[in-house]
Image (cartoon, rainbow, N blue to C red; front, side, top):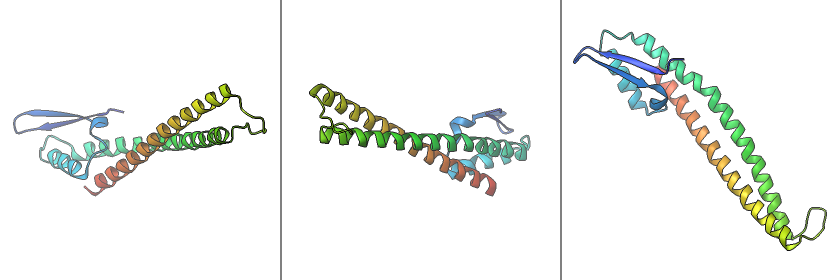
Length: 146
């Protein structure tokens, strides 16, 4: 898919090339302004450029949904590992009831920190993916209204 939007302007003889991955997702006002610029020149085929923008935004949705689902799953798994390792550290015993040695306890505490950091990273990525997904959906709605 061509990710560059070519817009021609008759006043000043300018051409604008918009890199869609850098432009979307954006605010509603930016989309409306872009559509106004596209319509402002007779050289542009508004329907074609409009369809190109809609197709690009719609093509991003499955990827973002997949990223959000996988990041959410990973965050849940890391959270469980973090809590399990934390319980082992707090009790000082393995789940089988055997006491931890000092070196094992130290290693388990390091693992707990590692699981926590991994969980927080996956959680942040999940939240960013969901936010981007919502922004793209809002962009699609705005493009359909214009």
